[in-house]
Image 1 (cartoon, rainbow, N blue to C red):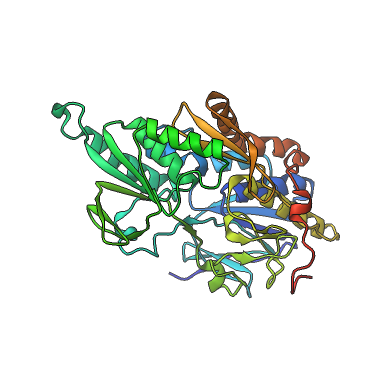
Image 2: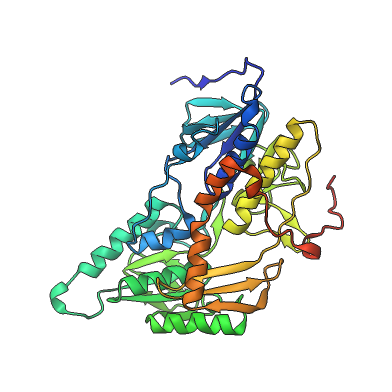
Length: 415
């Protein structure tokens, strides 16, 4: 099939946003709202593989059979003037300034917002890609849910004994939330959480102790200080040779990004993330802005790591920068400081670790019921935030700048 290509003949400045996750949606809604009165001069197009918005912060709930609300990307964009294109991004031609959709359609751009987020990195460990489940998408989470339901339903006549073992690899936040959620939802399954560090290692002593107590209460067997050497069809093999039987394995240890940016010739870091300047533009292709997990964004404390709390501000700032450039102004530097780490521990418990801007833990934390309410407020906030930005774009432009923690004295090669 010959490739189809849109041509630019109307003099409109075309902004294409790749990916409609937390950061991509923030960029698209913010930019469309700010340029709405100039639709003849600026066109915003959002490209995403599906029409449904994926709440990444709730995928551990999907994996444990908790139903989630359906949120439609086209519905959210309605009234903003932004266009929606459903399809897989299969290539970016930075020289021609085009994006290949589904290997058959070329979409041209003048400015590109690259917001194709990360997925679970199963590549370092043999067998993980073949035998482990991930939470990279709603479909992945649903596959795990199907498996857990099947395990829980086996041998019902045998009473309340253990019906299978689920191994969760990775003791970071996603691993903790997933292990707790599965253990609470399926008490007849034996849940094992293992990783290189103890759960809550990045929290203060009180918060970490609460995490460990909650996992113990839910019956989760924790193995910290271990590393997985191989994933097999029915087991996990640790470095040193120990084998742990597993009827299902969930992989939450590390993320990777799509190789599209590197293949397009954009400057990327060792993890494939686009290296940006202070305005979130690619250092090699300034017409490309990178946001969220797809970007290597340097602050005074180092390179940001991917979270929703940081991803949405990057999307909004990219939109602000593009709008300023289109109006003949210079974009401003992006600054962001972390402020909390909310972690659910099933439906009835949670921990909120408040942090310094560099993400190190403060002495203050919330636990129990008040933390549950706080965590749910945070998790539910992105969608209504997009709705408010449609009517009041400035409402999305508030986030902690981080003070002295985010000031950059000078980065070699930065302009």
